[in-house]
Amino acid sequence: MEGWKTWFRKIFDKNYPGRKIVGVILIALGFLALITPLTPGSWLIFVGLGFLGIRLTIWDRIKSWFLK
Image: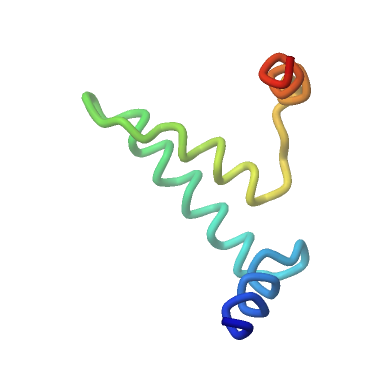
């Protein structure tokens, strides 16, 4: 079990290049789902942006709204 923990820490480190690759792939898949009719999954754009470290400007408002 310890092996998985170190692997996840390595993958989700902010400076790991694999994280940027996964983020770009998720953005591309989300954009493809956005322009394809009747295909859910355009939310992958936001997940990909999160992987790249770009947060929505309203994310803090949304989070505080759910915590109330």
